[in-house]
Amino acid sequence: MEVKADGTWREVDSYGTYYGTADGKVYQERPGQEKHEVSKESTPTSTPVPPVLYAPGGVGGNSVIPLKPRTPLKAGEKAE
Image (cartoon, rainbow, N blue to C red; front, side, top):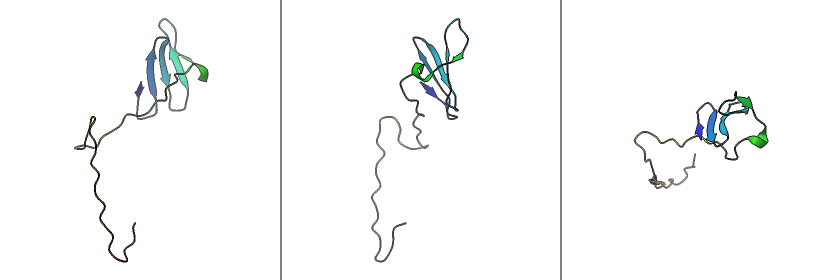
């Protein structure tokens, strides 16, 4: 499934191609037919999610981001 930053998505399966719009409408396009809106019962069962983004210079792939130890507060200092 392809998900874009604007909330639209696209999924291809054996029945055709599904397109989701940012306003929640879903359309299906089959070979030899025009694109048409479909009901909720006909939509894909998987939930579209945006891809995970990593900061430049950060850890990617199957790596783990190391935790940074907390620094203790001084006497009388409050946490923000």
